[in-house]
Length: 230
Image (cartoon, rainbow, N blue to C red; front, top):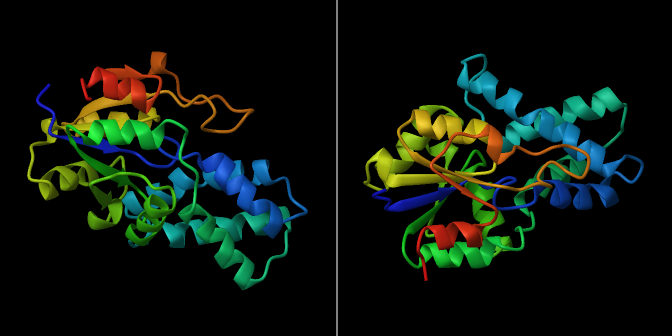
């Protein structure tokens, strides 16, 4: 493979959204099951973006979609929270812990390739998240730049165009089948990284056996080795 750029999904692939969101929910909503709340909030993630991709609603960046999903979930659970608390809850997605292998693995990949964060997160969200988790990316490529969401082909092709490479020179790394299917359909090469606890302790994450891609790894360090990095 003639790879020039390695692009990484963020939520679940590079950072542990479940632990990070649940831990920050607990002091803000002490009367709810923080883990269950985090999962049910995340369940609204793809459907909310699909409505944008399919033209059912105008473009809105991820913070707006998260706030709408949050308001809907609080109403469904009959949980009271003032506007300040709701804004703080939306911002929990801006500060999430990296998986233990993420920083060291990214550093190794970056030694040989251009590394990019390619995520549905908004540009401001990703900037704060990458900084807080000390993730060594060369650049941030938010879906906001394409004004649509993955797995729309426009997001992946916009990333390749902005970095002045052909789509097949970009390796998309993700822990989600839907993301890799979208990247492959857009002409990118793909790598699946296993994150068994990505959806929390009581839900099954995507498995390598169910994903069709070019490379399979059990960590970013394993991926770095397969990419023959220092």
